[in-house]
Length: 138
Image 1 (cartoon, rainbow, N blue to C red):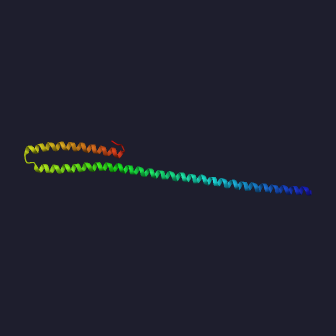
Image 2: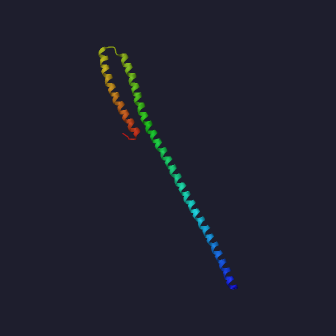
Image 3: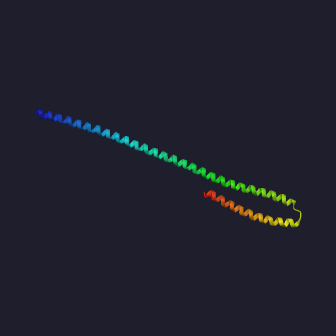
């Protein structure tokens, strides 16, 4: 009986040690899993941050390209306006110098021709502006 009690005592001690080791192993594995999970989450956060940064860079580049195209279209429009104003100044000077009726009639025909040319130039300018704003180069 004494031996049986001693065996039970050793058996109980062995069971306690086995439970303790199992708990230590469980805690160790849980810590390793938590560390691996934290590492994976940090990697995910880094990837998301990089994507956000790349998207911001691409948006900035696209915005600059759009403004550059818009500036080019406005520059073209501005040039057409300057040409028109210069033409009008010349017309005023020419009209003030005309005295004879035949010259005036010829000038009227010339004005019609200029008006048609202006209309063509305006249409071409509008087409060029629309092409540049839509991103299509001529």
